[in-house]
Image 1 (tube, one colour):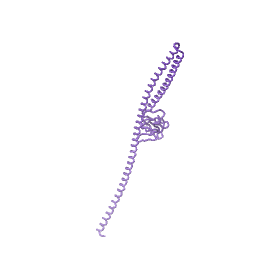
Image 2: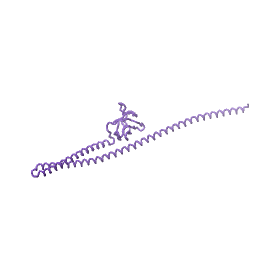
Image 3: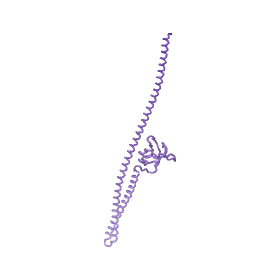
Image 4: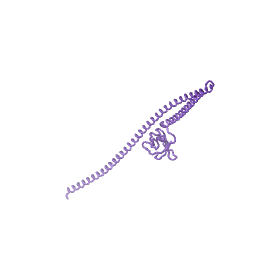
Length: 252
């Protein structure tokens, strides 16, 4: 082989080696780009999942707020109705007391008349006196019966007013009757609220505070934001000393 041929062969070999090196570098870059694409895809999928969770949490919060507003409106309506009924019953009580006073005065008048008739027997015939006495006795009996009816009505009205006042006190937002006891059924740590298995049927009302504990350990307090018949949603207050879990006990 001539010297020129050797040079050309050497250049061809060098060029082939350079092409092989370039191909190897391209292959390595392809592998790196593929991994970057995979990581980006995974990051995108994770971001989508986080967005779904955030939207669900937002939906839960909006539903809880709507339920709280509905429960508050219902509580206010019930309180207004109770106050209206209380005012009506208080007027009935006043009217009953006035009627009772009138009936008692009439009874005294009948008794005085009967006494006067019994004192002045000498000036009338026996039949007239008997008729007058009988009439006075009948009037007295009728008035006494009316007084008894008025007294019964007065007592019933007073009892009804006492019950209404008790219902009004129990219906005020944030006032819970003693003895409420239940369980935590769900905990949302992202939004810091819990769901309990006690509700309006147990006396739970919005803004009422309940205690969460496990065994003998105090875990913290929660504040009711909305209540249904047999369940409620409550925010975990900042003084919570431990993680609250589903199954923990609740009382007031």
